[in-house]
Length: 166
View (cartoon, rainbow, N blue to C red):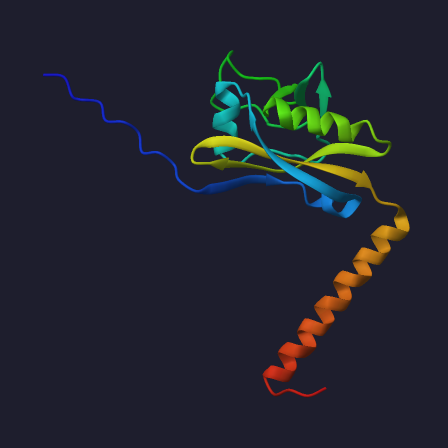
């Protein structure tokens, strides 16, 4: 007698695969969107293994469709001839209103679309893209100084709460 096949357990929650930490350092983030990704089978397996890089990635709107470029998802190690290209162009799944809103904002000078993170939500691959404007060198130094000042004040507060005076 044949065994009954049971459905696979559905993944719940959010599992982060990759983050682009440098994007928050290099750009002023104006607005963010969550978009689905059109992936091939071996890309999903490689992402589930936690392998991806968003470092050089960017998105663009081409012919009223959103595309993700230069995101590196390495080939699946157990894949055969069905493996994917590591840096191929991938379609983003956004609704028409979001795409037209992004398209209007991108036409302004200096704006670009950068991926901030790549993750799974309830088993589906998603990417968080951001409308961003490039920072100048002095902006980067200023944000670094602000971050260091808040870190020092938190450390001083922690020392004071523990009863250690400077």
